[in-house]
Image (cartoon, rainbow, N blue to C red; front, side, top):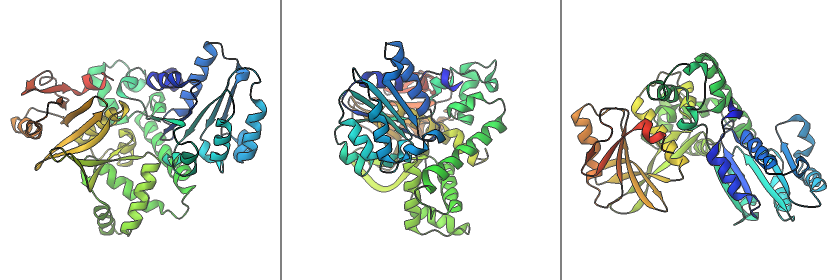
Amino acid sequence: MEKYIVRTKYLESLKELQKKNLVKVITGIRRSGKSVLMEQFQEYLKSIGVKQKQIISLNFEKLENEELLDYKKLHDYVAAKLSKNGWTYVFLDEIQMVDNFQKAVGSLHTKKNVDLYITGSNSYLLSGELATLLTGRYMQIRMQPFSFEEFTKTSSVLKKGKTVREEFVLDYLRLGGFPQVVDFTTEKAVHDYLDDVLSAIIRKDILSRERSVNVGVLESITKFLFHNIGSEVSSVNIANTLKSNKREASYNTVEKYLNYLKDSFVIYEVGRYDIKGKQHLKQNAKYYAVDIGLRNMLLANKETDIGHVLENVIYLELLRRGYKISVGKVESKEVDFVAENENGKEYYQVVASLLDKKTLERELAPLNRIKDHFPKFIITLDDYAAGATYNGIRIIHAIDFLLQG
């Protein structure tokens, strides 16, 4: 199923960057669809007349490419296959597995008529020497699992006969958007698959670099963060919680493990922003899971706070749309998301239900205290409230918002 869902947004980005003198760097959590995107783009190239011999495609997780895990052998192999006439399109999948890969990438980028695309499952791909080598000469495409809009294009047996509005959103809030999930017919199969995804991330993206990691402590920290999505936490909070659960970890260890999880795209950290003071605050960030299904699997579906789950999903959607996101502070009140792009700001509150009048008043209060004229929204799962406006603040149904992208 995964290969038939065209990742239109990402595919269009690659088309826009074709033949540009930039290395196209596709990053994202393992199994989010990076390899399939590269295959889809190669099919597009062939559809516009590019010959197969002009395409070099290597996946470094395949055993047949093991000899090329040496950067010099990789470089020489690719260089020998470059087209003498016209462009050569080079695709290097999971490039971080190649020792000193940055040397091969940097050299290939200097060659004439080479259009270079690389993928990686770690954000450190663009830290250190590669970033230095390619300063101003690369474009990063940040890939995530399926959006809700992409999810609705699937036809898993889990959703057979269901309508988008009534059931797809409930499935999405429960199962998440990893592309392979839509191929399974039982929730146990989904659970087992997502468990394997997390194990692969720990084994291939963390332990392969940091062999001293205590896997039990790492999993406990991940569970803590997934349990507390949408809540302010600090490394001290986490260390104290681990201690109370008989898992000792120092503040410095917690900080390191948080960075490993962020580098592997398991979690996203969102800082706080003082709206009136127009400054970013250093204390207590919030964290969100890269995929709500992965979160639900790890917590064994015991944590069903639909409000925070919805908030996580909305955060990921804003991220997909290219916003820079902060948690807003206005006096003593909080705004769930301050979303910024080249056009300005937007303010968002996310709440599962507005049936209780006090809940509506609580969600409106911080937005009403913001005196600028940027758009303000409350996103909810309540059908009856959608479309209403309060002092310029628009109420939007979550499904309508998720399908706008």
